Amino acid sequence: MTTAFETMPSGRTPSPIEPLPHQLLAVLGQHRMATTNQLHELLRPGTARQTVSAPLNKLRRDGLVDYTVLPQSNRSRAWYLTSEGARLTKDFPSLRGRPAYPISSATAASLKTPHTLTVLRSHLAFVADARRRGDEHGHLDWTPEVSHPLSDGERIITDAVMHYTLIEGEERTKLRAFVEVDRATMGSERLASKLIEYARLWSYEPQPVGRPRSRQPAAAGPVWLRWYPVFPRVLFVLTGASRYVLGNRISDLQAMVAEHPLVGTLARQVPMGAAVLEDLEDRGPTGDVWVPLAGGDSRPWTEL
Image (tube, rainbow, N blue to C red; front, top):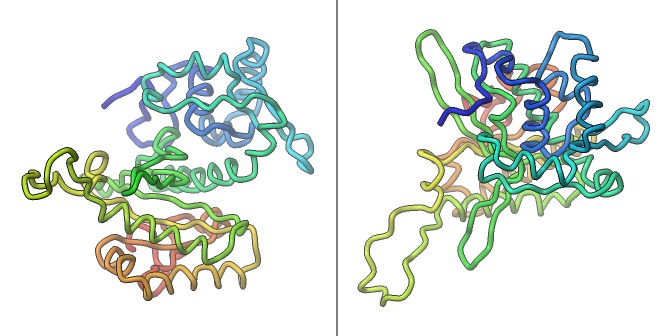
């Protein structure tokens, strides 16, 4: 499906076809919140900061966006859509079907900023790497807070679903990933249990209701086939603690793969890895920074 927010053939920067204010609204609708610097890097890298800050201030005067000031940040601003901005953007082609969650106040925004902005930091690491390599991964190829059904009426909510196209000569390889961003705010065992949820999603085949099981037609396959041609990779991005602590959390993820039968089966068929966010920013996601959860040496996420 094409939208009004096409990227340039190289994938390096967003197309100037749509006005920048339109793109700013779309990004805030997609990512929920972003700092001025993040919006600058995402939409107009290499230009003056005023290129982005001026239209943001105009959108604020129009009542479509607002901001909260980040603590201990030299008064850096984190921007978000107002209720009116969310209403306006809900019919943007790129945002159709995306639930609108307008933030009602600066106080509400401040509660969401740490995790939301860290998830966007992870996205920016992939965006910067794609620009360097000439791959395709733009500002709307990363969808935070995506929900999928599990059995028994439960759901799994992934921090982000990533779409990425590797370009090597004339060959284009489409990759997808479920991305979990961990700031070391939950227990390590709870983090590792997220792998069980992904294994359940991978294996879950809903059964038709209303007829005896013996008369039910063959299942249409796993539920994830409704959205993906192959099951996405599972990537954990960790930050917010010492290297020692983050290393232990990665080891606990590997232990879950080794000890849980369904997770182990998933790991034999789906690439899964973990990396430290600061390494992604310093060396790029295609550096040897990802620890395979099934074991082995560190490698690029594309080679897990």
